[in-house]
Length: 278
Ligand code: AMP
Ligand code: FE
Ligand code: FE
Ligand code: ZN
Image (cartoon, rainbow, N blue to C red):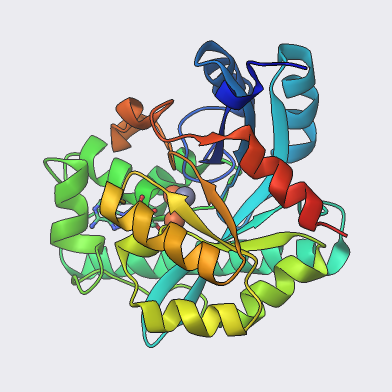
């Protein structure tokens, strides 16, 4: 018996340079090791390209890496995020959809830059592309470019003045329904979780997702206070769902270093997930 097992911690929500995170998978896993995490999941937006190597790196460093992904879906004009865990990163239909979402992200970045230019903000697409590298391009790359090229005073201002929801250079993403997102995770033989519901969501939407077959809810997240976490754990128990959590760490300009290691879950929750896989 390993009596320290109950103390072991996991962080199942982390981003890398394969989407809008600042650290490479190696840098992230090293940081996880230093923070004494036993299990992590890398959940890049619309991308699982980090996973294969990350599993090997994790094996070398003694951190288990669970395959993950974060998808965006739309409910009543609002965006929600669905986390997929234990996804099969070789499943073709799943990979083709992720490629399509990334292509759509690129087209959206182009539209945002065009809008900025028409607002007399002379940001160049290359300035954004060089920050995204080969990963899924997102607004955080545009925000960083706006700050570093001198068009916004801060990362926050880049959103509040230009690219945040409802702002003059805002552009929607590809519109996926929640049911389609859940189906896609199921196609990849993964488990689907509603990400950070406290950020945006009425319980009615969560109930619809439960009816549509969602497997669990992310109950631990920096946007959740203790009341949110207790509330969503109550729903999880009532509907026999799984529970998840993590720091949603991105690093870099997001300035969220204090979240790393502070928003974790017991590894037992991951074992509960494994028992639900078939
Ligand atoms: P995207 O996936 O391209 O829509 O970018 C979404 C990401 O941008 C979110 O995960 C946040 O990290 C960031 N973001 C969105 N809105 C804001 C905001 N108002 N202030 C700061 N960051 C934001
Ligand atoms: Fe992100
Ligand atoms: Fe998210
Ligand atoms: Zn995230």
